[in-house]
Image (cartoon, rainbow, N blue to C red):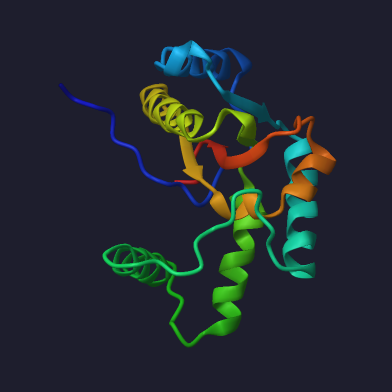
Amino acid sequence: MTLPTRHSVRGFRPEPIPEATLAALWTAAQQAPSWCNIQPWRVVVTAPPATAALATALQAAARAGLPTADLPFPLDYPEPYSTHRKACGGALYTAMGIARDNKAGRYDAWLRNYALFDAPHLAVVSVDRRLGPYALVDVGVWLGYLFNAAATLGIDTCALASVAAYPATLRAHLPIADTDLLFPMRIGRPLK
């Protein structure tokens, strides 16, 4: 069995994905199994020009204050996760040509997360907090289906946990119910 290859894109073309292609993506992801078939994932998807307006608001929020995610990120990563995280970050900054001691360059690169790397779409996944941890497992399975379906359809994606750290900004711009924001992702076609 050959699975499609996927990677995280950090530079997108501005053209939106056709609505029919996005519909095929969501249809494929809905094939994911879920506990008691509750399908706990809730998704809001932006399209231009709303995506750019949201990116501007997210950048302002990131510049103005500290993150306050609905589900807090770990403060400390125990081993082996700390090593994995540092290696990934080092490889990413090296690929971007940003030295470890280049604080301004690192800050600008961090801020690009909130510019959504110019993706035409942002999908924000949330879950009803009343459903507990099994719903989180279901969302993880669904995301696996979603990412593989995107790769099969020639759509590029990138997980974007950092954006979940500003839920007030997301809720101010998107019709998100009283759910825990889990997982934003950029969707589009790569620059290269």
